[in-house]
Length: 339
Ligand SMILES: O=C(O)CCC(=O)C(=O)O
Image (cartoon, rainbow, N blue to C red; front, side, top):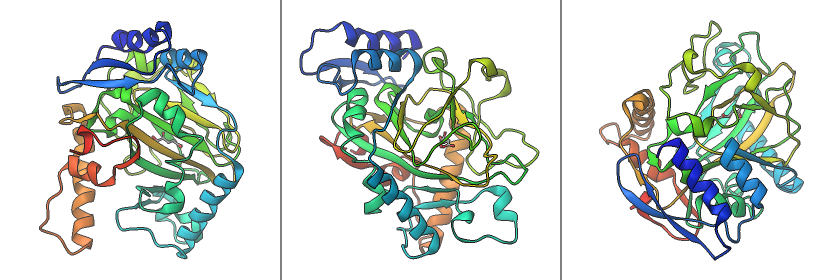
């Protein structure tokens, strides 16, 4: 959907009388038209917050997730790192390129990201957290799947600058549409600021950009696996970037076309956050655009390695299957996404 149309659809809800829910027709990237509901009427977001999301592509809710939960997620992460808790083989444990190369790696210092924790009951509690879900429903509708889960543990930079996360749009990673029915919730598990590499966003970029071509940036100190970025010529001016400094429990909800990333961690501590990407269960799977081929290839490569480790070297998994098996219903009913 063209960006101006996307803004129109979102802002039109502000003008609607408050009926229970609104059916809108959304055309997916594959050309299919599907009905989705947008629950502005009884939304957890205020009209001002919806407008902020529509215009800027993100909205921050302060103190949204309680401290007991944030502490629980951090403790679970510690248990995973120490080996006390073993994750299901579908979970993906990532290490920083520069740290993974170094000789001495202990405990949680080794692990920079845990992805696909949908089968861990403690971490997955975040995805269905009662404080988070109403906001996600306000943006993507009541029938919701969690699609991608991450606990991020940005390490102190070793000097290589590899702790940076290049500017990117999350939609690059996803083979489902429409983009307006996908949203990320990202919660700080501690104080985050420019020193330890908070999120940095380009407000409004979700409305002014299509899905851009992504690739590995040419960084001398190395780039972490799957840290794809937008090309230099599409980089927003630095002066327009906004750093999201947050406290433990603060949560930002953002659009999958929003250009964002995070800076280097210049402190001695690890910077922790937890996130989940949600999609309406009425989204549809699409063929990845030619601009997303790098992503398709890497998903296939990881699937091949995983299947081989599980003794199923001859099995085949399509990119769509790889997404479907990690999708979990978190509210409402199943739809076309997992059909
Ligand atoms: O938490 C971060 O440092 C950045 C995370 C992010 O942008 C992502 O994983 O898409």
